[in-house]
Image (cartoon, rainbow, N blue to C red; front, side):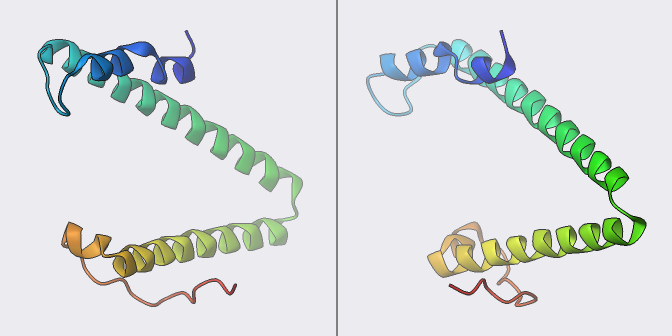
Length: 114
């Protein structure tokens, strides 16, 4: 069975469906086993996705000139940092940051213009 299919497999859904109350666990060991399996399958899927991402990046860099490759890497990193900052700012605006008791986000990137 493929990892993606395992992640969406039945055990967790059936266990949740059979509970009469939210959070009830009359079959705790089965829930723990299903959750462990689910977590491991998600972990494997993330590893596979990361390998694919790196393989694509390596192939793109091989196609580009050295200057283009450097520009791509710089812009990619800047985009990554800005998305992180925008997410932190959005979390703060929605009150999520206060719930998680984390620091106020910095303003190192301008928000995207709409």
